[in-house]
Image 1 (cartoon, rainbow, N blue to C red):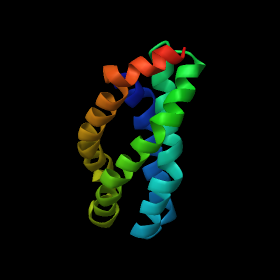
Image 2: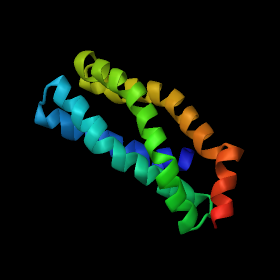
Image 3: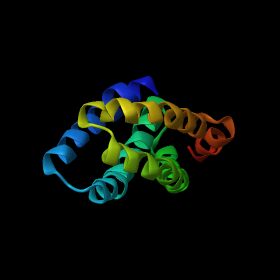
Length: 128
């Protein structure tokens, strides 16, 4: 999780916030772009990167994308849409990354549990 956060999630989210702030969109547009344009490829990339870091093959990767991505994306929207409404509406730009990383602490615990749960990994290994 640390490698994914430091090398992948952190830099992309940071650049994304800068991009959105430069555009000056409304809160609703920012949340829509964040959750429906950025989140799906970001989570897809996370699952691919994590599968690679686990040393699993392409069959496991396809299984994760097919079976884990839809559920993870739904939970992502339940947590992050309200959180991002608050972030883009009330949090000054210089504190947005700090705010989102506070939420991400709990989100990453969920992602780690979801993607490292023994019962979730076993079917992927049997697919290999």
